[in-house]
Image (cartoon, rainbow, N blue to C red):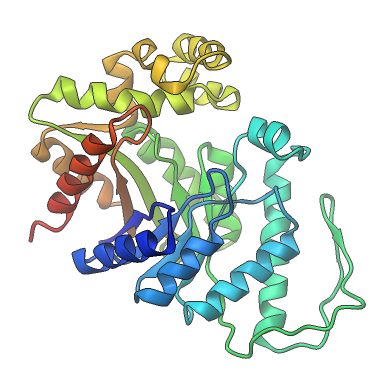
Length: 338
C-alpha cells in the first residue's frame, strides 16, 4: 500500500520542512489542494526539495483554460522529473459560479473534454510536435493554429486522476482516466457498493481492465481512546461538506438529508465552527473513521483491500491546530507502525 499525505501551504521554508518530514516518514507522495488558490507553486517547491511524487489534489477543472491546466501539468512534470500526477475535480457548483464567476455546464461531458485536451497537449509535448490539432467539442472549442510549441523534450506521459463524489464521475474515471480519487466523506458502504462498482462499470464500457486504474482513497480519521470524542472531533468536516448545496443528494442517500438541509441554511450565515452542533455523532461516524487506534486500523485494512494508495487525513475544520497536529502524529504512527 502506498500512503500519500496532504502538504499544507505556507512559506517556501515551511513547505520544504513539511515535505521532508513526509519523505522521512515513508510517504510515497505529497498532495496539495486547491482550496482555493491553485496548487502548482507549493507542488514545485516540494518537487525541488524531495524525491516524493506530487499530486494536485485537486486542481479545479473548470476555473481555468484546459490549455493552461495542460501547460501547468507539463511544467510540473519537468520540474519533478516525471513524478507529477494531475488530479482533477469539478469542485462544487457554488464555488465555480460564486467564487470564480464560471458557468457550471454539465460536469461529466465537460470533464471528459478537459481530459481529452490535456492528453492532446501532453502528447504534442512528448512527440515534440510543431503543431497541435484544433479541438472542437460541446464545451470547449480551441484553435492552436498560430501556436509555436516550446515544450520541454523531457516531457513524459502525465497520469490524470479524477476526483469524484457520486457515481457518474466514478464511471467517467473508469472510462477515461488513469486513476480515481475518492472523496474524503465517502462512507465505507458508499465506497464498496456504489463508487467502486461505478468505476468498474466505466472500465467495462471502455473495454479496460479495472486493474489498470489507480484507486486512491482519501479518508478522514479521528483517533481517540474515547470513541465519542473521536466522533465529536470529526463533526467539523461533515458540517463543512454537508453545508454545500450540491452535496445534498449524497447525504440524503445516507438518510441525513434533513440535517444536510439544515446545515446548508446555517452555513449561509454562520462559519463552520458554529455549525458543528448540528451534526450528530452517528453522522460523523458514517463519513469519517472514528475510534481507537485499533478501530481505525481495522477500517483502513478493510478499505485498503480495494485501493492502490490512500491519503489518510485528520479532521481539519473547526479543530484546534494543536489537536490537528496530534491527530497527524497518531495517523503517522498507525500507518508506519512496522
